[in-house]
Length: 345
Image (tube, rainbow, N blue to C red; front, side):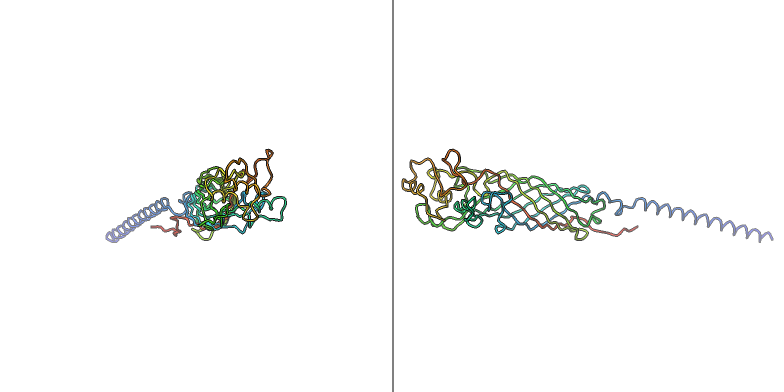
C-alpha cells in the first residue's frame, strides 16, 4: 500500500510540474507573439509616410500663341492651325492629401502669320493686319515650378489614392525664346537675297529699333484632371496659360521705325513687308530714291490700326504682353513604391 501511495503521489507531482512548465512556455510564446505584433510595421504603420511620395512624368503638349499676329485683337484669339507640338519631363513631390509641387521642363514652338490668319475683307482690323504681312516662328524652352491643389483629398496611402481628381495649378516659369522669320525674295530695292526663304533670327536685326532679352519670365496657371491607372501610375490632362512679361515673342510690339535708322537691307526688309502683298507706297519709294537720307518719319501702306494723335507714327503692333497656351497629356510613375503583402516572421 505504501508503495502504491508513493507511486500515485509521484505521478500527480510530475503531472503538475509538466502542466506548469507547458503553461509557462505557452505564456512566453503568447507574450513573444504579442511583442511581434506590437512591433510589426506593415501598411498601417506606413500610412502617413505613404501619402508623401515622388513621381516622374513625361508629357506630350500642344502650344498655341496669342499676341500681335493673332487673327484679331480680342482675347483670347488664336489660330488653331498654328498649333505646335512640345515635349516635357517633370518631377513631382506630393506632401499632403491635396498638395503637390512639380518641376517641369518643356520644349516646343509657337508660330503666327498675318497672311494666313488675318482676313483681308475685314475692313475694321483684318485688312490692316493682312497688309502688314508679318510672320514668325519661335522655339521655347521652359523651366517651371508650379503648385497643384487637388479638389478631392487623398486620405489613404498612395496605393488607395482616389480614382481621379480635378486640380488647379499656378507657379513661376523662366523660358528662353528666339523669334525667327523667313527672308523675303528681295530687299526693298528689288535686289535678290542670296538666303531667300531661310529662317533668320529677328532679335539681332532690331526691326523696331529696340533690343530685348531672349530669357524671360512667365506666370503659368491652369486646371486639369488626374486619373489613377494602377497602384503606381497616373494619367493627367490639363490646359493652362503662360502670361509672359514680354511683348516680343513675335518680334512685334510698337511702331514702325524710320528705315534709315536700321543697320542693313535685311533689317529694313524684315521690318516692313507690306510690299510683298501690294506695291510699295509713294513715301517708301521716296525714301528708297533718296537712299535712306533726310527723312525722319515712316508711313506704311494704308496703315495697321490707326495713325496716332501726333500723326507721325504708324502702329506695327500693340504693347500688350504676349501669351502662349499649353495643352498637356502627362503620364507619371510613382518612384520607389511597390505593394507587398503583410507577413509575420
